[in-house]
Length: 108
Image 1 (spheres, helix red, strand yellow):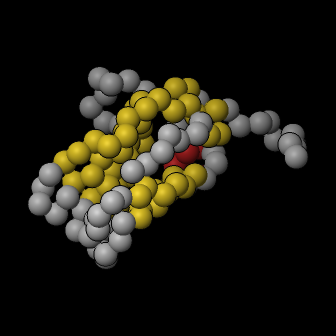
Image 2 (cartoon, rainbow, N blue to C red):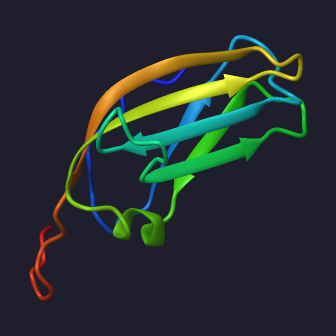
């Protein structure tokens, strides 16, 4: 399953592997981020439909997707819906979107 995600900067791309102990072909992986638990719609949602035999899936947030998020703390969750319809949340955590540095500032 997924390990804890690190905080990231607004406007950065981010990807991470999610490993399973079984083949997830035919499943859908859902990653969501929301500012509050009461929100009906998440601030960010990534859906991955798995159409081949695999036990490792990469979740990707593009730079454009993260740039659309406000700086702050979010609730996040990973879920899998198997081909048989079983839905399981396998990782929930808080994750922070950090501000980007002003233009012209370089960090090495």
